[in-house]
Image (cartoon, rainbow, N blue to C red; front, side, top):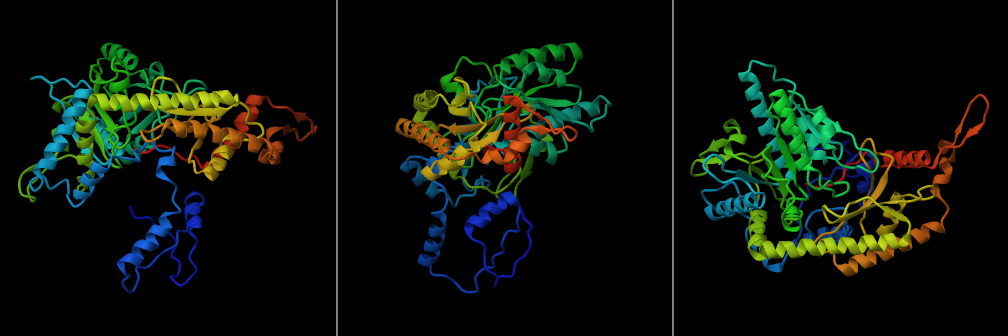
Length: 499
């Protein structure tokens, strides 16, 4: 992607790295750099870049991200050894292609894909769940259009039904590929898509309903089984065949190991495709994702391209072309290294550390826990009293201790709720959980001793009538909404989550 910006003269004083970072949020011009006229010694080039990178946050303390930040040294060696392999050169690197196929097979089996004469699952590796969702969405759109054409009906207004809590990649899909996004709004205390409301929004132009297994906001699993039952009933009444896609970017490598009896996958007949992020709880460095279709019939043939200029006929269904092989090899390493037992142990440990952190926060008496016990191992929590200080201030102060903990407002219609979220990954130990809870309590006590920055907004919290100049006191809930909306404007509606 090319980013256009105002050109500054190369001789002008450059902005500092911190100013460049801040420009992402205030939309100031990005400084332009020219390639040096002369070469730089390799040691000097390394030191220059290494010194600048020291200003980055510490990945293991980045609790905003679901993305894997640690792997075993043996896997690191495999990654380094395969950095120069282009994945698309299947004829030149047939073993790498075979490893990808094995990974697809393993994932399809984890998701209970049917394997028989009538239905055989197919899938592909991607650079993340964003690409996987684009591919799945295109398959739904093309199949819907083909059916509508055959029936002689209009096929120019496709839509997709999701919850307002979906990751931003769904909005990208809708905008890039001209599909209307119909969002089920959230409500306070219920921060996932309501299956009843979702099915009510389905019409003859709906290409699919997207359910989230592991909401970015709270980690909660949506009720895919209930959605399947309600949608089956509506399809029977209307004669439609609206399918379901499950976005299991975060939860796809958790549910099979922690909640094996939970029905959310291909055990449900209307689930036609599932995506999952290998670089999240698949325990691989970024970026690798996977998408699996229930059968070949769910992936229209016209979307699959065939090339032969790399040595043999090669089918390809991706948005990009060249990409590295390292992450696919790393995914296969994790599968055979850990096995079912290893993944189960790691997920149970993550869940236990989330419990430790949750209990530490509850002992302070200052927070409401928003996240649920069943779901992605994370802790989302809000302040019980935001009248003096906010979760955004807590997030800022935690940076002084090295922690990166995001603060954000919930999607519509629960945008007046502001929360902090801590993602528990494999490399987040019990001792770190205890330390974080202690540091959060320390920050809260520090803020108690400081004047409230919200005092300057008192006029916005209390309405003054122009005619009588009488003050009208607002309720505590209205005050909280005002404060949350104020901070929401500061973060400019930023979306969170990585695919």
